[in-house]
Length: 127
Image (cartoon, rainbow, N blue to C red):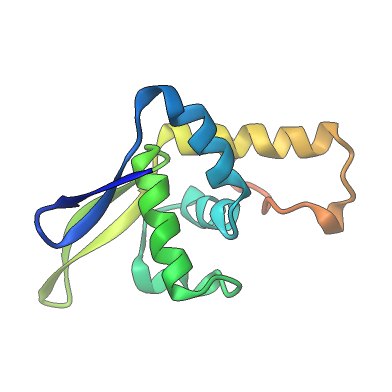
């Protein structure tokens, strides 16, 4: 995976178009991916809101957010809050579709409920 400088402050993942499927498979298997998508499913969150994903170390979380952005499963928006510029993360339609597919796949595979990774998706008909 190629890393390049973006705005001289942030490293961004550059994924060649033919590798998106492979990279998506890898990203799904990484720790915390489905938890992040599940958390964002019901609304945008700021970085500090990801404390709900307790199993993930800070460096892993940062890496995962970059990967999910590169795959266009989530987006980052600049906002002004508490008198300063910050940003929040939101799930994209692709991210929602992936989460729905994964939940349906778990049901078809008859994985015991206690072993399922995907949190129940609320308000599914409203999205």
